[in-house]
Every structure is written in structure tokens, then in C-alpha cells.
Length: 201
Ligand code: PCA
Image (cartoon, rainbow, N blue to C red; front, side, top):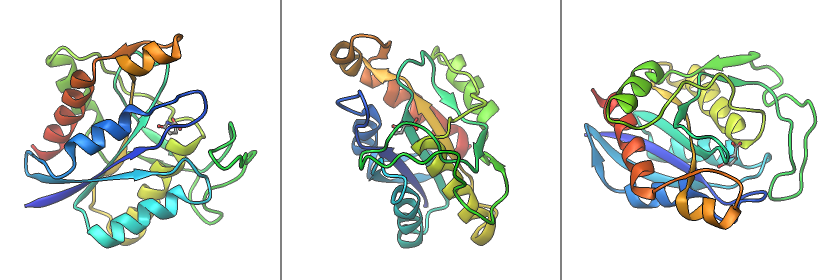
């Protein structure tokens, strides 16, 4: 059986919880399509999250990598098309705030996702879950981790599908936060499962 490394993030900024943690914890150890799911939580830390991801890849030797992040305020599931070689944005959980920095000094300006993002969006939409390709993962931690995974794969395992899916807030988080839309957790879980099934088929 193949193995998929599924990552989520800890809470950050104005979000007291991160539904990606719940999704990853629920799916860890399960089998979806041809994949055994290996779930890991990454820190919201510019100086650590990329290395954490690479550490998990080296230890688990997955056949594919799907990283999840919360996009608080988005209404849809959004597979990301591109990761930029840029670190810039709000402070991370350690208070570190890079401005206009590169992630990899010798790396290319950007990488495209190697996940079947169009097919993922089509399948999500077909099962009634709102979805769209996103053309920007931002320049915060999610972009940072997506870039790190694709940069590693480009060097060491070019055939390995790798990429990022931003998910909306859970209903529970939306209620706590008060200013963002939210989905029931079960629908978030279903959306992630559909994306992994798409990759498996
Ligand atoms: N979302 C943030 C970082 C952690 C997360 O879940 C982002 O979109 O960059």
C-alpha cells in the first residue's frame, strides 16, 4: 500500500483553533483509496515548519504529500496552484515576521503544485462541495510549507505528487471567531477525503 503524508497546522493569529489539526488527527492511520494516511501537525514558525515537513518526509518516505492549511474567510475548498519563493506577512507564533525574504536563496521563484488540482475541484464540485483552484497560497506559512515540499521533491523525488489545500474554517471556529464563514467538520473531512481519492485514482 502507498503512503500519503497529510499535514495540518497548529492555531495561529486570531484563530483559537485550527480545523486542519482536527482533520489530520481524524484521518491519521486511515486508508483512503490506495493510501495509508500518515498525519502530522506542523508549527506556525517560519524558521521551523519547512524543516519539520522535510523531516517527516525523510522519516516516513511517503509516496505523496498533501498539506492542509486554514484559509479563514474563504468559502470554498481551494487547492493551491503555485508556491512562491517568498516569506512575508504577519508574525508567526514565535513573533518572527520576515519581510520580502526568499525561502530558498538558490531556489526558483515558484513551483506549481504537482497534485491533480483541476480534477480535485471537479470532483469536489460534483459531490456538492464548493471548490475552486486558488492562484495564491499567500506568502505566510502555508506557502512556505508548500514551497518546501515541492523544492524537496524537485531535488530528491521528482515523481512524488506534492501540494497544498486550503480549507475554510470549521463551523465551531466560525462561531468562536465571529467574522468568518464555516463548514461542518464532517464536510471538511469529506472534502479532504475526496481530494485524496482523486489523487489515488
Ligand atoms: N493557515 C496559514 C498558516 C497556518 C494555516 O493553517 C496560512 O494560510 O498561511
